[in-house]
Length: 374
Image (tube, rainbow, N blue to C red; front, side, top):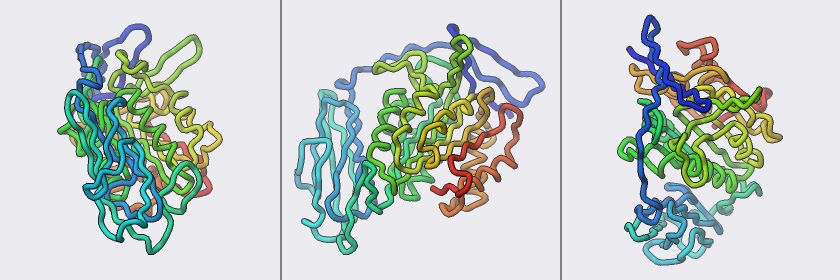
């Protein structure tokens, strides 16, 4: 069996290191560069996602229908039960104007490359009051959101094997439990059960910021990410980094490096509960997010320390920490129950994890007095 470390270590130069001796893994750090040219957004069919309300959600009262489009210049048309209601990214819908029951929300956007669309079916039930919310007010309706990242094939650095499987497993588990999910990856759309675009630094940051902006105190947000990790050393200062798909050849004004301080800043003003799962090398150094004033709302777990590695595991077709935390422990041992705490899942997974030392998974619990549930 060959296990591949999810490591990319860069200073000013990308360094390739291969270890294939008595160890049961191969350190995967080759630095071959593949030039990938992408058309500008207006030359690609726009990706359209109805982000709120989520598919299958029960709604009531006055709610906002919200639509995200990959091409910001392509304004979506919104339809309810086949009737055009708005040419906009947001539409306020008074659900008391329709009968209780199933209703279809449809959105489409068109540019020079074609038309993209999305459809969500919701249930209107105005017998119990209370519509959808967001923005921190606390509407007593729990909304669950997730941004999921899995990058196996990178734009300009060496590839990994099973990060798309990691993203698939997180999506299947969270979506089945009522989460509105956006999934970002490496362009191989057939490898994902849902695909919302390349996992560029820009796209991922925009998605996280959007959901944290609409999630109120009753809501839950999950960021689960698998891919390469590295660090930047500037003098005595070290900044750990999650390598997004465009690492080393950034897009939309970003460099493709989601640094520890950038992740912390994204979550700084979050009022909801939040859970971060990172299967990247060096990801234990992303814990600056726990220095925020809202740390008591959060729980972070990483595949390793700030000096450690994560691994692709051929035997399980997953990243090692994703497999042992999600598949082996949460689903395999606890039957996928949402009534089990993250602390219990972590403890069981850690007890069975095959790597140690700097490669030991880490737990950063913002409130050790109370269990954290999703």
